Structure formats: structure tokens, C-alpha cells
Image (cartoon, rainbow, N blue to C red):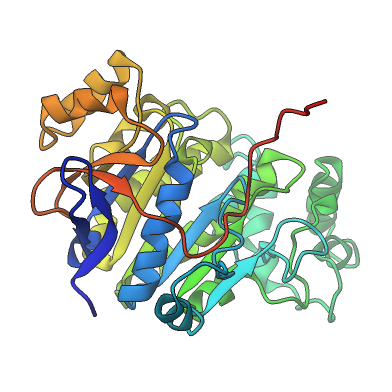
Length: 360
């Protein structure tokens, strides 16, 4: 494994800039306002990880920006293109009809997560919550048979109550449940070089949150396997809010904060990417030992970063207000010393794009 990840060139000298691959075993915060080139630059980083390490990557992709990470650009250098072509990039799509679909197996989810999906409280809804504990004990469904049908066909009236709740909440209509399909956790456990969990086309945010929670719960449940993984959460404010409201949001935030606090020793390493530090729960942010900062015009946000990331020199943080697109400050464990960098060019295609202004 190469110890250095080529990331671009230094702003002040045009000499090659690198990051230390071995220090990806620390949590990373990747930040930059809209238009700074944050997503593009993160793609450059992920490509270099694919090229130079054997570290499996799991990307939570709420805007479908990384769904083409396995598609190599025509202008990529032949050597890099040949090397990337050997990597397995597995994309699970939330948009119907686009490749392999992202599926979640409801009965395999953690009991608290299933209860949160169905808005069940263990105290106020004690009877139904207790029934949820027994859902796995019923006879497995016939191939392709929806869970709600299985519950309705049961002789137990308590299961009928759960079926009604599933139908009343519209959960049965979510086009994401695995019946005879391979579910997302099985794909992650097969350990492709990168698993892209595309969350961008779900109709309601609860679907996005449920899919993400199923994966994070499963990774945590298997933490003692001690398999190193980089867990990339793009637009992290969607999954790790500083002020979660619903039961699903609380569980997601709690799980990510738990991984931030305890996951490092098990090989669960986070990369949280967002536009503003105040959008991410502070208990997750404070655990990040690596910082990638792109253009940031808010003095208040820079003050927050200075307080949280003391290893980033204030004079370099201040320069973020004048950064051009694709320019970044890298500081922390994954760089020998803080450095200002013009991030290099992509080798693979971006998944998303801005809406163009129509011209006459």
C-alpha cells in the first residue's frame, strides 16, 4: 500500500501535495460552502484511496453525487485508468430502474430502529413494541412475500395490529424493502472496494434515514470483527443533526456520535462532509482529528472551526475566505504539517451537477 495519497499541488509552490494514507484511521471533517468544490474534491480523495489502499469505503450519498465513482473519465491517465478498472465499486440505487436497487430487510434491523420507523414508544406503546420483539420468530415469508402480508396471515391478533400500523404510516409503500432481494448490509459485508449507498431519490426523508440507520447499526453490531472501513457521510447534516427531532433522527445521530466516540478502535472511521460546522452534532465534530477546509466566507464558522480544531493555524484558517474553487486547507494527522492545496483533477465522473441557467 502506498503511504501517500496524491491530492493536488501546493498553492504557494505548485509542488505535489500528498496526504498520509495511514492516518485515515482517524475521523475526518470535510467542510466547504456551496460552490467551493467540496464534493468534487472529496471525489479526488476517494479515487486516491481506491488507487493506493485496500481500505473498503462506504459512502452515504444523499445527492447521488458519487454514483459514477466507478466510471472512469476518458482523459484519465492510462496507468490510473487501468488500476481503477480493477477496483470493485458497488452502487446501490434509490431511483427505481437504475442498476441494483438499494434494499433494506426490515426484520433484520435493530429492534429500536424498527420501532422508530413505526413510531413505537417502548413505554407508551408497550404491547405493540413487545410484539415487535417477536416479529423474527414468525415463520419466514415465502419468496417475495411482503412482511405486512405475512403479519396479516398470522393467527396472532397482535401481529395484525403491527400490520395496520405499517399500512397506516405508509411504510408498506416504501420502495426499499428487501423480500427475496439482496439487502444493503449483505453488499457491505461482501467488502467491495467501495459501496455507494445512493440516498438521493427517495420520496421521503424517513426512507433515507432508515436505509442509513440499517447500515450503521449493522456495522456497529459487527464492530468486533475489527475490519477497517472508511464511512463517508456526505451532507452529514442530513444524518447527524445537532438538534434531532424525530425518533429516527435521534437514533441516527446517537449512532454516528457513538461511532465517532468509540468506533476508531474497531476500525470504523468516519469522514463527515458538510457546508457548515454548525450543521453537524458537536459531539461527532469534536472527535475529528483530520480537517479538510475549502472556501468558507463566514467569519463565525471559521471561529467555530478554530475552537474545535486547534491544530489548524488561525492564519491559514483565515485564508479560507479567499479560496478559489478546489482550493483547500488540510490539517491534522493525515498531513505532516498544515498545507494549502489546489486539489487535482478527477479520474472518474461526478454523479450530480448544477442546474444550468437557460440562455437565449
